[in-house]
Image (cartoon, rainbow, N blue to C red; front, side, top):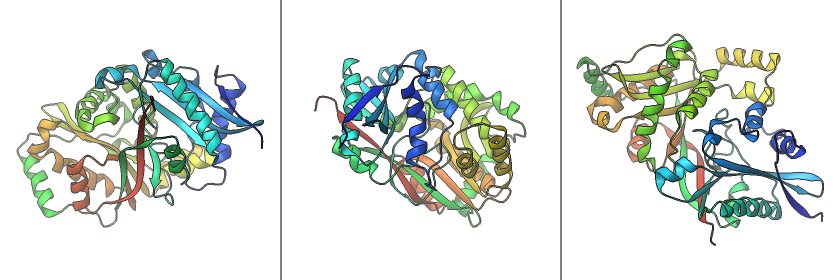
Length: 378
């Protein structure tokens, strides 16, 4: 059998960079559940053009068996994250690999060695850039990924990473709602109506993306404050990262599906709905061409799937009817146009109140992504 070797990605123009970008497309060729990320976005990260690199560092590796690429991984040192949590934690991301335990071991050993050189003592992941795509899929393999917001991987991934001593830290859940039958329970509807009648909250309607851009900075501030209680996966965003995430989200946003909860003209909470463009993204194969853009525009109008990724409310508004208003907004956007299904993603298993509320609304867990961790001294 050919020997395994690991090679760093030294530049965005190197042969290793091309292999890093291309490998997932080879691995998942013909897979109906996998949705590719834009190649330009991956190249920008390899070129250190992402705002993550304003204060943090990363290394990227490809693994080959003989002359053939069999895997990739990224090792991240997120300095603001460690300052916020008071840790020496490394993160791994962009892990993809054939079912090859020796290749997997070589990839993680390269990533762990780089982290140890940086003085890091623990590792957690997958957790990457911005707010998207954390965890390895461990349940719900028959379902397609939610665009590029939550990734897809083959069932053997969990076995491979656990062989490397990584153990469950926390699960991120995706919940399914039937949009054709979803209705608020009377109790929650009454609480939402009372909150609105009191005049404590306003829910503006948006028609243009330019209207949303005016709130981008404030949404980022509310995100940072509302998700502080989420534990180890909470990753504070810098102003430039907020701008980056805003640009990415606005590319696929429908203003009518974005709801802000205002109190005295300040954002108290938010709920982001997105038309599911997964099918068009799959056909585009990660490339932005005139044809792929046309496909995205067509899918934007005809998709029957709604993805909810991002719902938060400041803690001091949660007992004033704010939660009920969030669910009322969810009902409103789910009933728009011709949606048949709602995929609510990135819900931490530790958010017991939200999970209980969503279960009351009829939502069911149908995909599970797992965050893993281990000590680097093992």
